[in-house]
Length: 227
Image 1 (tube, rainbow, N blue to C red):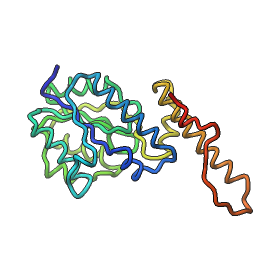
Image 2 (image 1 turned 60 degrees about the vertical axis):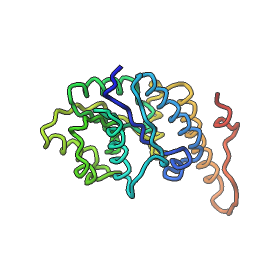
Image 3 (image 1 turned 180 degrees about the vertical axis):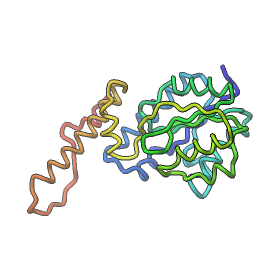
Image 4 (image 1 turned 90 degrees about the horizontal axis):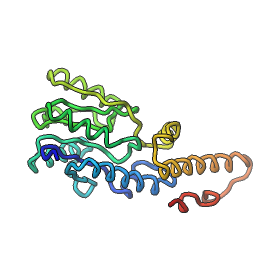
């Protein structure tokens, strides 16, 4: 077991996640994504730490993220692999390959389709707090800026495949095209969320003249009947 490398799961609690990413029926989705992420991490047998909003400290997202990475280094680890809980296709391979690359002091970046990243692996010698704080966090330029920063520093970098992380219903639609690579349970949850969205659109479109006060519901309640 590589005791020099630790995984940092930087992800808010389900309650906080849903405040920032409003997806109707999203509680069951993010609960399963968190469960799957932790299970995937455990299969690597690498030490890991979960930082929800309770463990994070800092005024901005960038500060909280950078501080969390520094915290893991302060625990005595040389390498940190950072991930979230919102990338359904994240696998043990991505984590193990990152750990392998880090043994040679190679910076690892897993870019996400929206311009951010779903994984970043770096040695403590590559971690410059001041420079990282200046990155355009939570923007579509983030992955590009990190790549430019690492190349400018003449640090060897490996880029993993591009994956989709979930921020809204459009991301769920994009992920639905790759069901074969998802677990059966996660596929069912995503299908249910998409059907729920279609039901709402059809219901609203069915009457354009009257005004209603109502609560949306999903026929058959598949979101609560999954096992």
